[in-house]
Image: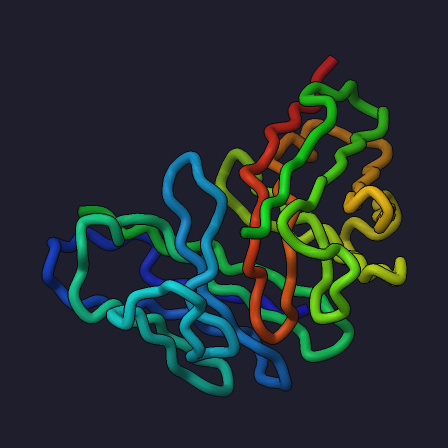
Length: 108
Length: 119
């Protein structure tokens, strides 16, 4: 079973700053990596699928990259509405199924 | 716009069965591009995949829950359901029903329903 580690657990930043969030998998094999944003009292929202594909309606200040065991989500310039918790998700190629990382909370 | 809505009891007694239903509107539950499934979030904010089901009824479960979980689907009602048996306090969580596009990510989520396991 692949285990995802996200770092840091919490990050305090200001609007306008650039941030890169990390997600590391315990092993490398064929799978897909996605990123989600969650605000208090809301369901997670898909930001990025398949490592780097922005979901519909997601601003281009969000970008994803990575390969092997190391993946990142970058927000180029933080907006006030970006302060939330971010989760990465590992998705099996086959059989279908997925696991989530523990999350990184982004505080203003 | 696709919408998913969870329904079912919010309070379940230990050792009993948790049952939730998700109603899909604004799209077809029989679309063969997607799976339908359940994700839960513990009070400590850990997200856990429970399982997914295809419109044909084919299911895939989280191995850690597989012995207690059953998913089913009723395409005529645009609904799919979760049954989790022998619940304990550790099953207390927010339960989300979701649409899963596999490589395309888990792209639609219900608003979630908090289920508490307590006597």
